Length: 375
Image (cartoon, rainbow, N blue to C red; front, side):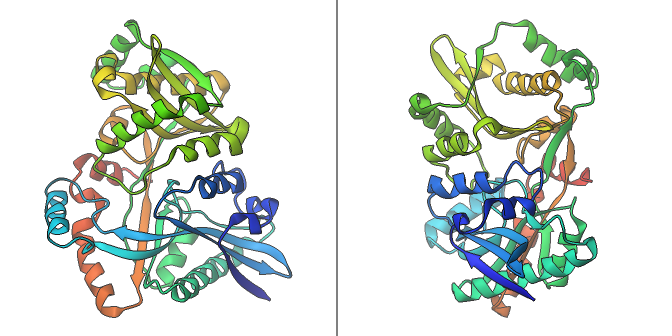
């Protein structure tokens, strides 16, 4: 018999049982515990678990928040939304119950490794039923799945079978490391990109330091983070200093901060997760006024690629932003789909109409090109 439970802290779930549903994931029990303990403002956490004879057979992470419908809107649409907000604050905000995480690139819905593949679709469907029930108990009408990966067709099908509406999400970018030197990587790129990167490598750049403890630097890091966030059109969560501290502490050797120094000044940092196969770029922050002349984003990109080559990593996972540059840098893209449904049929109909305007690829040609190249 299958029973479902929703928890408000991941500490109520056995670490090994949770991780058994997500083998080889860097964003595992330790990562979500770090996120939970970071105290990110305006988000609450839920953890869905299915049990069979007291053994965990499926699990998913959930967040609740007041979702801004213009989160992924850019350009003219963003300016229109800003005027609407000035006219009527809160008009575009709606309570949301979403499977996934605001600080993960895709929604993880996992089943235990001992589960036969034929049983997985039914268990995924039961997770969605549990999610709807938990959302109803919380009084939240809008149920969503944030970034269901196209690499998991069974999960996509389960969402469709549950009657959820869909629209394109932000694709995930990856650079497969199939070359044995940085020069060989540059040789795979277009002529103008290759020329720009080689010119960057020839000039004097900042010094680079890898650290796993940054408590003394957090005030400066947060200044860089805030400056970077304020330049972004796509804003969802605002990370506190505790997020960076907790991730580095909880993940230990599987997380690092790459620091970029000009003399004694910290001008950029890059939070990364890593194991024996992948390097995951979680966040890059920098002082644009001082780093533009050093082409610092490209320097950090090349530093990460070089690290992957040197340590035998096969995947550089580089996030959900900057698609124009990543197309030039040889990335491949994995599609994500956002699913949603509101229990109120009138609001549900309104959201189905709005998705034509709020889908992220409408105002970003580079993102649209990346979506068209998803696998």
